[in-house]
Image (cartoon, rainbow, N blue to C red; front, top):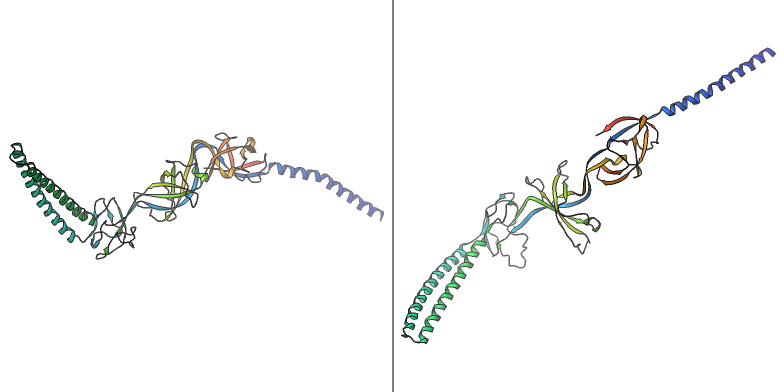
Length: 370
């Protein structure tokens, strides 16, 4: 019995010694595993490139020029020569009123001018003869003055007849509605036979016979706050995007910055112009405008996701270990931010896998981002 007990005690003792001997060795292994543990990251090579600070607005695309084609006199619509969607040139005849009465008035005025011109010519000759007789003292002053007044009256009648002719010609001209600029017929608002009178109180001048638009260029009028308007100036570059044309970016320019705010909204109007030679952009649709407020052509840039707590980044240091760098930042856009200090061109900044990373950690570079 004693022997069995001794063997049992000896066995327990040996097991205990073996356990104690092995325990420190396992800790070292775990410690070694912690040292060699690596973090997989993606990096960005710091480079120099142009960067722009941007402001974003939404606005309605407007035609560069728009006009309601309306005659300056009333009358019945006799002919409309174009349809909606037609492309027209400056000076092209678009529509006309019934001009029969106006043409008769024009003929009457032309005849009146001819009569008045003949009378004036006759009165002028009479005056010339009377002047010769007066130099010879063959007529009295009263007779001379009578002929002189008759000549002046004939000249006045000629001027009156010419004015009536000019008015008739003007009425004919304005009854023929022509395009004041190249453009597109956006709307046809009346039909042949309709009577139109711009002088009537109930007439809407914006409707007109036709609506003509020039949107070979377009513009957007933006509502800008007081804080932003001081950063915007004429000539700034702008970009336009529309939902119906994904991936397309249109380049434009700021052409007007109002110096006074609107009383109702306390905001400022800023007009931006965009070329539209293919008429891809359509008036009265929404567009997203980006204004390039400030541009630095040779800035050191890094991805915004590389910045932690708006104060520092991690870079790849010696022995592939993470090194913390405090950085000052400048301009930024949707993706990039300017590094004003703390980094140099060519530094490898950790852009993915940096959250929760500790300084000095061993890193494994999985990819260099473009």
